[in-house]
Image (cartoon, rainbow, N blue to C red; front, side, top):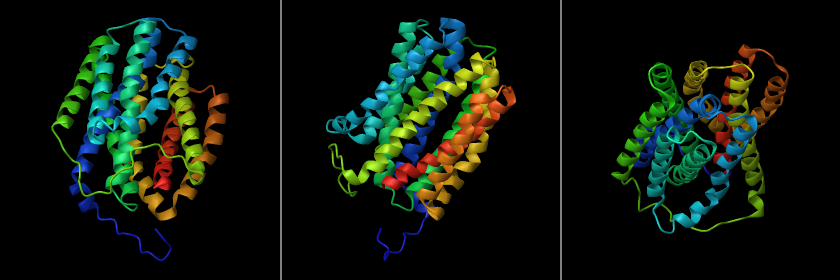
Amino acid sequence: MTPTQKPIPLRIDNVKKNPMYLFLAVLTIGSTVGLQAWTTLFNNFAVEVVGLDGDSIGIIQSIREIPGFLALLVVFAILFIKEHRLSVLSILFLGVGLAATGLFPSFAGLTLTTLVTSFGFHYYETTNMSLTLQYFNENESPWVFGKLRSLAAASSIAIGLIIFLLASILNFAQLYLVIGGLIVAGAVWGFTQNPADQNIIPQRKKLIFRRKYLLFYFLYFMAGARRQIFIVFSVLLMVQKFNYSVREVTLLFVINNAINYFLSPMIGKGIIRFGERKILSMEYLSLIFIFLAYAFTDSKLIVAVLYILDHIFFNFSIAIRTYFQ
């Protein structure tokens, strides 16, 4: 948008009428349920059932990021399958991988199922971002990203409560099967939908590397590194150092997501109002203090507060996506 152009007004009713909005909302719920369940159960399952130590867990977590690197292959995959279909297929992989996790309580089994779920999650995240930027304009996409984060938080609360209630009734294998089955059901629904619009500008189906996008590449690279620290280190710290149980981890996740349910749409509107530069600067400045506090605290309560603050500022990374647009 040039300085002389007027910004396109945000019409939320029109956004919600777009079939792609409902499609992405449902699949985002499935993706979030899968990631939240995996994050909640993984460390306790790995330590208590499989008997892994920190080194083995770190290896699996590192292998888990291989699909994230290979997400660039999405651009070749959409030569053979429509992008919205690839999104659904990714959610199906996530559900199947999660459902099978409890059936293979070994290092090799956990590594394999983690790879399957990770391919599903990372490929959906890639197509989700792409479809949102294609189907919603510059003024709509920050709101859509924020709303999807809000729905994700609500979904995390719901699955957190389900795990909290069922953890004393079902074993790990049964929990994985139930939650994975729900995600597979969502994928089946997705295969019955066709939200594609033939009138949008055709997408370039090839890799594009340009010097002017170097800042975007760097920011996304650093966001990936930060996410790895956030997902791996914080929860493992709670389980190993502070002896958080499955129910305690679940309760923390519920509180965290309840807060972010209300804050995520506000973050999206903040990006529209203040711009990506200021929002991202706030995020990066906050990380200095949060990570230093992680390193030196011995308080179980403070670690929980840091986790919530970390997650709040992590949602500011929506601005990286809209910056690219």
